[in-house]
Length: 125
Image 1 (tube, rainbow, N blue to C red):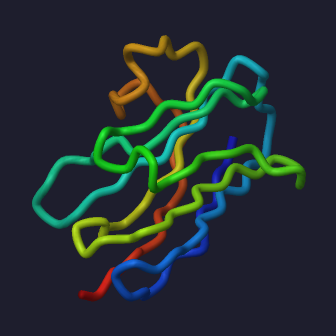
Image 2 (cartoon, rainbow, N blue to C red; image 1 turned 135 degrees about the vertical axis):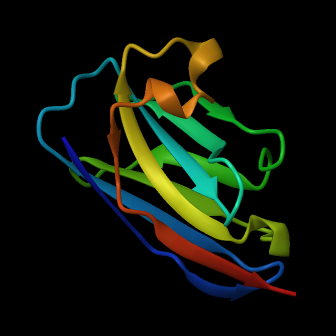
């Protein structure tokens, strides 16, 4: 499985961005797709996750109500729609995929088997 994240950029506080994660290879319906973010000197932080087959979504408290993860109609793509962006959302965002991750472990980056290269989101104040 290979993941390619894109869509990052510079945006003013209050603005919106949509990140995309294009997946290639064999992905089973049981896979979970996640978005994480990381700033220099800090651990990778869970943002959101969705089951590859669609349906149930999970969010970090810091983004709930502002970010939406979804499975796109386009083949093998997962999106992260980010609205009401804040300067503290500035980070490199990574998409990830993992098989059979239980709900209580979705926020743990060591549960994911595959990672994209990251895309930088910068929110100016």
